[in-house]
Image (cartoon, rainbow, N blue to C red; front, side, top):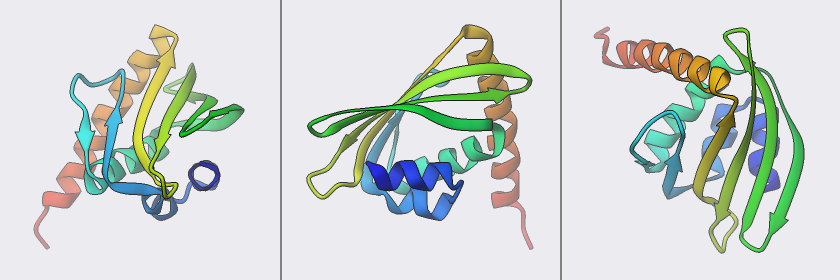
Length: 129
């Protein structure tokens, strides 16, 4: 999952989306339901790039088709620690991305910031020219 890691670190949304399988599944502690598909997950990950500050990976754990990328960041003035747990397809694309974050104060700040970012992105997407 080095290509996913590089794309995230470089904050390149198109490169991130290119690492996703067409039927990728995304799970987050911020929302109850899973999101499926490259378009939906790409939309969410673009918003994540916009809200996380000082994002950096601090560890990389690998085993078979699974990779855990441990990260630190800030959002809304709150510190955040987390793990991107990635399951790869046989061809090396991201089949499943599950995000875990802590502490609660950081998770709540992330939830609030994502709500704003996704709302603003949705308004732009639905605006008529």
